[in-house]
Image (cartoon, rainbow, N blue to C red; front, side, top):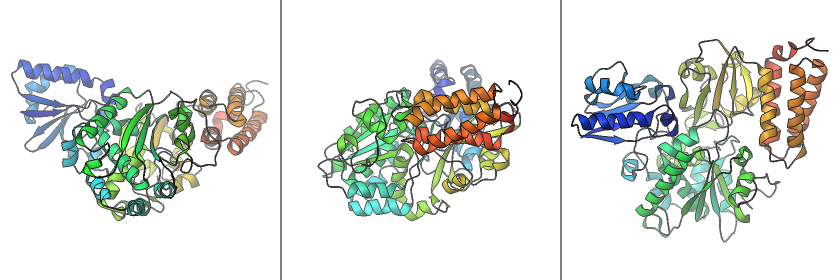
Length: 515
């Protein structure tokens, strides 16, 4: 039997992976060939999707991007035995775009059958959990702390400190909440990991539960991710049947259960306290802090809240040791970051590298410049509330501290490219409009400030008292930054001010248009 891998994740399906799967199954049947098709996750080279891989004696051979109309010619070229075809890419592991990466969190994504525990174990899965089951809670938390792992959801808070805080609380119940409400534009790593390697996330959740004494985990997945919800739901069922989740984790006395909570479609529910409100069945509104969720979180109990990528990195840290992980990276930004390349980019997708690579390396070395072929004008890093940086900043190191010093933020690792046709005044207005639309409405600076901000930028674009309205806009940004309850309103000024700083001509050009 010949094994063929075809991605079944949402991105690949959107460009015809299901149609390619049906075509290969039909062609195999009509030719009397014994072919096993496995729907794996995407390897992250999205411009090559659908990427079809065939297992041969010499390794997995890749072909892509494959359309259903290419299938007959692939069979005619004997692609099942690695035959040459115009879509041939050679051995999957030798594709330069993939070979140059340092994959830790994403090391199994695109490689394994996402819903096969045996495949997961054969590629290093459950090693970390089994080690954790033989350790004390203090020792597990110490490993996470020593690794230097910081929250990959955007805040960059040390994971070990958060875990230690929850461990030290006395409570009859504690929770582990996984924030999978990946709402930032240009980000998709959480989705791709859940669809391509769900057991990694479940293993990280279970280790976290054992470490702090929690018996229940909740994965809060945005409603716009139906494929991720389906895959994670199946993975939970499989793990329960395997004896991994439930009252006796892998035959021990530990209890840990995981359930999924579907998000309500609100961007602000990506903020941890609004997410807790939503899980509890309430409207997703930001809570005032203190108390911190680590002390009074879900249902008033001590709660660890981590992002998908944070929890999915835990198994590798336990399996390989804290020193192996923190040997990567620079300064306080240790380990790897899963960068997501999107926007007007030639080669978009997932790039996992140690912290410290340059923005230029990502945009040109991996991204290949713009999709349109026009010169790059700006890059936005960190989602819709991230800063806009010009080409002159491309030598910047991609780590938390360097980006902060440059007036930006790493966020969830999204990198969105714009060519010379972009109008940064319009983009600045979009940030304010986005905030006005997505604000939970609890605090005045965010609720009203964003609306007034959008109105003020519109006046600037229309050429109305440009200098006066620019001063007003900066004052408004200061109020939003200092007075907002959460990052929704507090960070909205970042893209606005960065656009005004680095691309002043897009604002000054309006002077004299209307008086």
